[in-house]
Amino acid sequence: MKMALFKAQLTGTGAIKDFLSKTLDQVNDKEKLLKKIGGRIVNEAVLDNFIEKENSDYEAWQGLSKRYKKKKLEKRGKENLLEDTRKLKGSVDHRVKNLKLIIGAGNSEFDYAASHQFGFPKKGIPARTYIGSISNGKFTTGKKEEEILNTTIQNWVSRFGKGYQ
Image 1 (cartoon, rainbow, N blue to C red):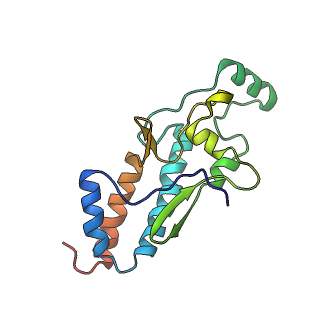
Image 2: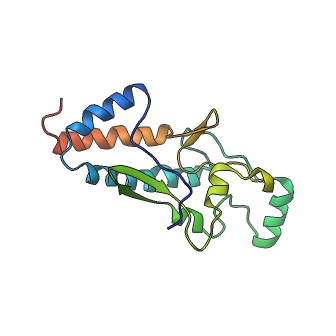
């Protein structure tokens, strides 16, 4: 599967980074935990981003240009941003490799996932970040992913941890 070159690594900033490093030491089956987190990010945060038309920091996507909006309405009868065929949304997936969670989008049927995720200025496509967030030109996990990380790890450790306090 082609991916949009997005990799969500379980590193964060400040308290999240400290929490993750302490917590993951207490988890017996790290791969299973990472798969659970990946599933929640794809099925909750990413889905919510498509529904709300925003990134994972709750910032709205840029709307369609007037010209493209008119063309889209004439051709399809609707202006549903990034969801005409639902192929893009349906292609978002996750996997765990070498204890790293990788979330990406795109497949052999289409290769425009990265163009929408990061933008494609030459074609006039602005970034509409549907996985994570972009802050100061740098790709990062957003607030939605951080909330999922916190709740999933806390629940996991309370159920399966080795006495983590």
